[in-house]
Amino acid sequence: MISPALNSGAQGFQRANAEISESTRNINRAAQEQQAQQNNQIDREQNLEAARTDEVITQPAQPPAKIDEALVNLKVEQFNAQANVSTIQTADEVLGTLIDVRV
Image (cartoon, rainbow, N blue to C red; front, top):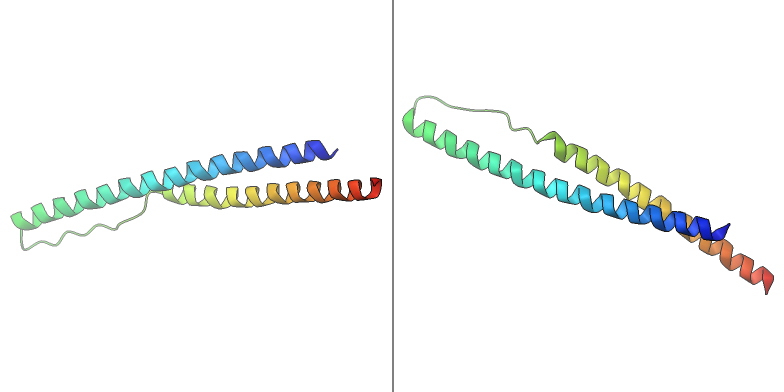
C-alpha cells in the first residue's frame, strides 16, 4: 500500500520535472525567436526610414502564443510537482506511523 504510493509520487514528480524542463526550453527558444524577429523588424524599419524619412512605420508587437502556452504549462507542472511531493510526504508519514505502531 505504501510502496505504490511512494512510486507513484516519485514517478509523477519525475514527469513534472521533465515537463518543467521542456517548458523552460520552449520559453527560452520562443524568447530568442521573438528577439530575433524584433531585431529584424528594427533593421527593416531603419532601412525603410533611410529610404523614406517622411513616413512612420509602426506595427504592434505581440509575443508568440508559444510563450503563453509554455508559461501556462510551467505553472501546471509546478502544481503537479507539488502534488506529487505531498503524496511522497504523506506516504512517508504513514510508513513512519506504521513503523512506530509496529515497534
